[in-house]
Length: 210
Image (cartoon, rainbow, N blue to C red; front, side, top):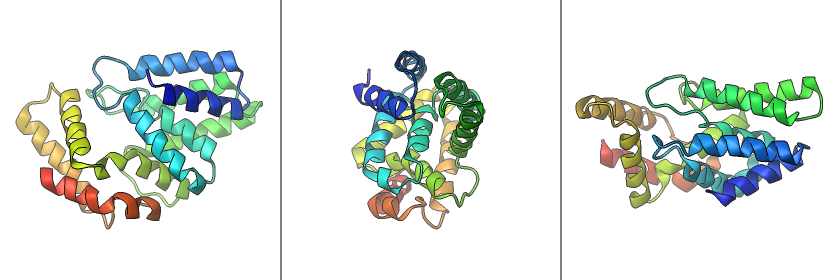
């Protein structure tokens, strides 16, 4: 599977002072989650794409290690039949951060876990935030909206495949509601970096499928 994700993960864990065998073990747990057969879009390919974008925007993050950790973890638990995936992903991340013993003390690992968990929960894209790192994190999760027509259409098909069990009429209605919510925003992206890079094309892509 994705060598890019593994390389990022192990380098991150080393920078956080984690023991290498534990980092390797947790990576296998992460891989097991993202390669589940019901996934089509929320796979290691998605995480790799987000991390590649993050590499270009890392300098904008106040706490890049925390953000990279949250990016890897934010879709770790994904069941399209449930509405608590972000909460469960945050729990998965909490267990991992304690196993890694980030910061070397109970207080430091607890603080790291709380902050990363809050960021993961924000990926529901339901509430506003004024935290610059969370804004950047959310933009990274939405870069797919501003990709080429071909890439966006592939993403759109993959989401439908993940929700194969939903009748067409119901799916189309719900999907349009989600996409319309992005168009209603003053801007889809929250940071100047991604507004300039993807805003125009993201709106074109969404309007085309509405």
